[in-house]
Length: 121
Image 1 (tube, rainbow, N blue to C red):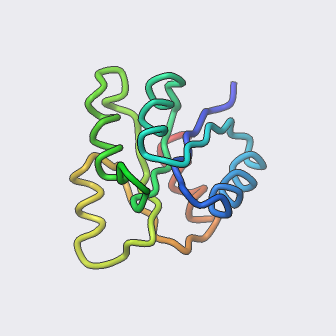
Image 2: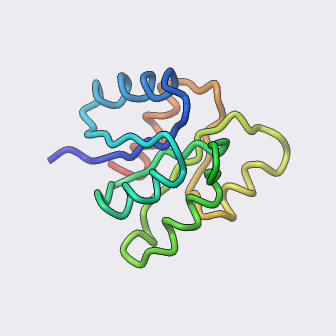
């Protein structure tokens, strides 16, 4: 059975890049374009991992992560922040919100797959 990954990303091009990369690696995908939708889909579909953009319209990735982590059944769900925020302190903010790790954009496909495999061997 393939592992299910939820991608929360508002830019279609970034979703397409991740979709192509992850489907070719054998993962099943669920996609959300907003933080609100990501929180709802995480609760409904119970993915094995979340790739969370931080800069989202409305509910940002920090708050979406917090809300997902508030759900008892999702408390241990690994969430990887994938963001263009790369200033000092941004990684710490993502980790404090509940993300397991952080990948900055632009990212290397090899890096994304390696980080995912750290949590989904």
